Amino acid sequence: MRCSVASPCSPACSSFTAASAAVCRCTRILGRIYVISCLVIGTAGIYMAVYSFGGWITHLGFGTLGVLLLLTTLAGYLAIRRHDVERHRDWMIRSYALIFAAVTLRIELPLLIASFGDFTPAYLVVSWLCWVPNAIVGEALVRRIRRRESSGAYAAATASAPRLSEA
Image (cartoon, rainbow, N blue to C red; front, side, top):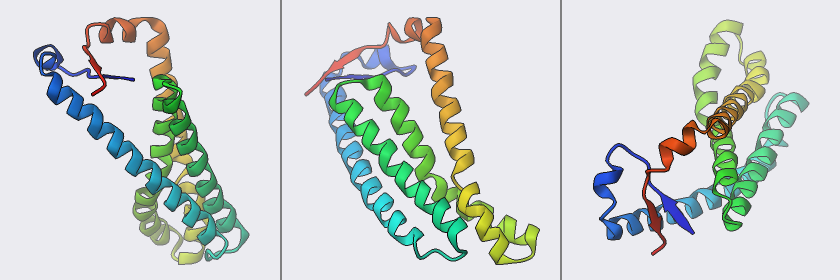
């Protein structure tokens, strides 16, 4: 497996292989922590969706979020196990967009309560609104990155980035 570092200071840092190896190790450790966290959160989310306030609309909204979080994270993990870094990146962008629903919900819910004047309709809406726009933005980002890669501009920009061997 190889790690790639692309930043403005990459040429200056390319000779620091010990530091680069530490970055790769750190990335793998943080990735494992993220995957385990997503497994716990996704599983708990599916369980909690069954008991969510608001009936079948919120059950389905939060349950779908939990299932998609598990599936996208698993797809990202399996991609990196196959050494398919590009697909790993794509799936992990999707996974992160979904896990960010927790933050989005906390921003949107008070605004929706103020708009609707009541908690119940706001909660019904936020059970979907907290993650569907995030998923759309994540997918748009993945497609934008793919377009850049296929145009050759990405390849030319990253060709000079040093490749760091695994430690």
